[in-house]
Image 1: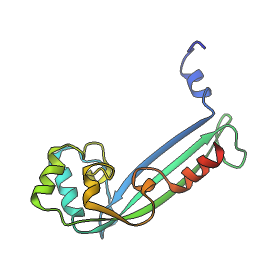
Image 2: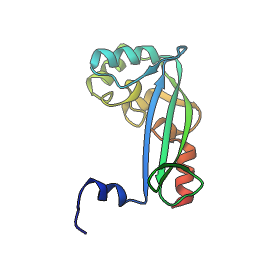
Image 3: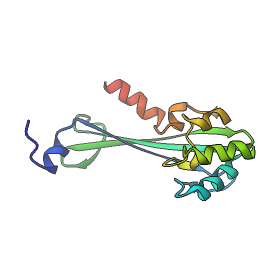
Image 4: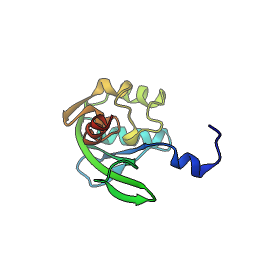
Length: 148
């Protein structure tokens, strides 16, 4: 198959999955996005230390094969799911905080931590599912399993 351009790439898959995650600051109605530097990552981790917070993940499935989904573009249809989990951070000691910052596990991670990485040893899920903390709506994954 010869690649003929962007339009062919868009029309070739039968299914597209897009997902994003945000961490809600404890006790505040603001999102902790991805920190841009070590200082911002440390600030986020200090906010989370010893507290519970929500992790929200929204996932969209785009397909050309499901007439129950919302119409998007051309023959594409979509459905979006959003779930949250409640995660609790241990009180981080100065040494643990420095370790999390210096190993750069915060890079590209909402809230400045990687649940599947080193930060996982200082966190636990109180409510919800691990897949949501890792970046996907549980409901969307269930839907995907039914499709596949």
